[in-house]
Length: 116
Image (cartoon, rainbow, N blue to C red; front, side):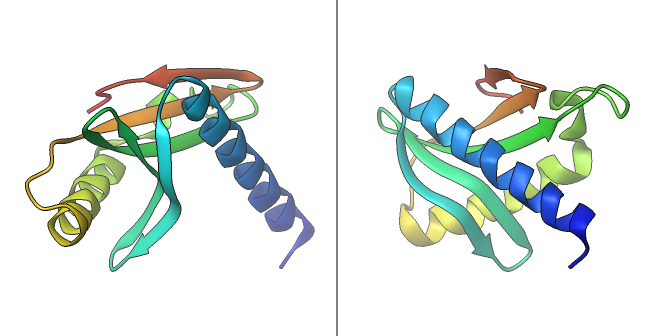
């Protein structure tokens, strides 16, 4: 692995750690992280009350490529919807679920509930 890729992976992991702590401080119960399923990965799975929440974490250290929230495009949203449907069907059939995004722009974290 190249040094750049290693640094990117480390920053991503740190961003996910910060997002998990951020969510927990807001009353979410973190159930799982980096859930790998056929077709992709869900960054964080939580409970917010009785609602199952699939959280995408996006980190941007600069604005060169746009905001972190803008980086969750149509393709990523479609992938997450499919992964969430599979996960919920297996783990908690019939449960209500939603999608949140924790956008990290520089050192600023923002929670976008019902992001899509």
